[in-house]
Image (cartoon, rainbow, N blue to C red; front, side, top):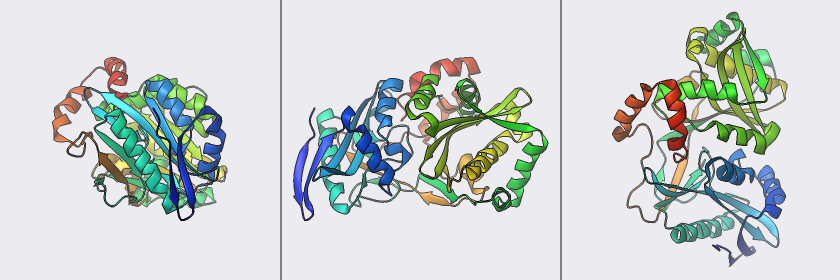
Length: 354
C-alpha cells in the first residue's frame, strides 16, 4: 500500500513517505530534536504494536530536500467489538503530527486521510496536545494531562506537594516502604492487573510490558514498592529528553492501607530529581474521575488534550471509554471477576482498546 506523495510549498517541495527500517535512526533523531514531539512519536512504537498485539503500523514522515521535517506514527486497530480505526498512536496518550513548521502538517494529514480511505476504517484519530485542525471534529473536554517541573532539590519537591497529599507520602515512609528498580515485569503485571480489575477495566497482556522493556531499554523502567518482601505497588515509566512519564502503575490490596501509591509516585519523583530530570508528566486522565482528583491533589494543573478526527465510514465520533453509560454493566461485572480470570480474559479485550 503506497501513500507516497509530493507537493510544492513556499518553502520547497515536501515528500511524504513510509517509514522503513533503514530510516529509524534519522526518524528518532528528528523526534529527539522536535519540540512538539513526544516519547510516543518514537519509531519503536511500530515494533511494539506489531510484536505485542499484531496490529499494523503505518508510520509516515515528511521530507524536504532529503531532511525529515515532520512525522505521523499511525496504528491500525480492527475489532468486531470496538470498530476499525487508524490512530496516532494506539495505547498512547499523545501522538498526531510533530513538525518543524505549519506547511508540513497538511501534506501529512492528507496522506493519513488517503490511507484511512484505502484501509476502509471507520475513522482516523490524531491525539494532539494542541489543536491542529480546527475544521476537524474534536474531543477537547474528555481528557486532560498533568505536567509539572521537577525542582532541583529533593526537600523542595516534597514541600511543593500540598499538605494533605504530603501527609499520605509521609505515612508510606513511616510504614517502611522501599522502592526497587526491577529488570522484569512480573511484579508490575501483578500489581497493575489487580488495580485495573478493581476499576472494571481489562488488563493489557504481560507480553506488552515485556516488549516495551525490550524495545525501549533503559528509557522504559519498572519501579516496584515493597514493605519488607511484600509487593505493594509497581509502576512502569518512560524517559524522554528531560522528562519522566509514569505510565502504567497500580497497587495491591495492601497499597491503600500503607499509602503505597502515594509513596510510589514520590519515590519516582525523588529519583527523577536525583537524575537531573526537569519535568514530571503524570499522564492522561478523564475529567471527573478518581485519577483526575488524585493528580490535582499533588498540585498539578490539568492541561486539555485535543483528539481530532477525520470520519471515514463513521457518521459520529466514537465513544469508547468507561464513562459511556452503555459500558456500565460490563464494568460492574468485570469488577466482580476472580482476579485469575480477569488476567486471562483481559488481554484478549484490551488489545483492541487502544
